[in-house]
Length: 328
Image (cartoon, rainbow, N blue to C red; front, side):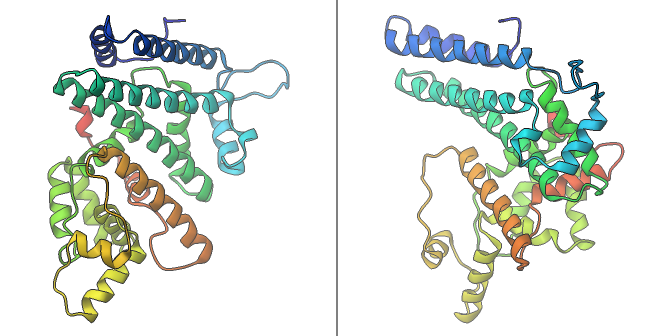
């Protein structure tokens, strides 16, 4: 079973250090980590034994290919679990389980006095796993809400199928690299708000991203619908909240507004100071995706797609694919 590589070399090294750090100090925690690790191996083994996405069991006589599965996903959607391959459902559960496993290691590392550098590395691994889940969610949502005849849909479906089929392999889905670049850069940006023009936030973000981002931003001139989605991403506020703040600023003749004032005006609680930035970004991602759906259903003003969706669509119109930071 352990011929499957469910941990990278980096992850294995950190796991080994944590296990050594616990030896003789906390037998109960050592046993807990070992049990959770074995659970991951067992789940991975079940997934590996699950039918291939394109394999033919010889029962129905129907030939399955990536193309036929892509068409099925586009035509029937992903909302019905009966349309999802077993490997996809269990694989998603595996990634969630692995996320929780490294969440446990983060807590144990702090409890047992793991060196600061290794604690930071654990945070980074946890964030990368979370970003993988976010990318998978994004692909699934785009397939569920976009028309099947959109030119980029077959490409999105192809990437999602690759993620499902090769979840344990070292290669990373091409588009996920660009999303990871974007999310890694964003988690280091604390919105200043100020004039609510987003100039400072956009500059800081752009400095952390490769050239493809600058080219994408230039498309704002040809598609003004992208700007509200970008503002939501930069400010960590909904379009409706940004509109309200701008209205209040105009009414009260304010030239700038800070984060504390914004929270008070919107009746929002202060963010937890020591929370992992990736978790804050994850909540923002979920909220923004839900709001795009709600606006579509109600036909109200505001972004109908998230900035991540606009970015994927933009990238699919570019050949050859631009270089990601993660490629370097």
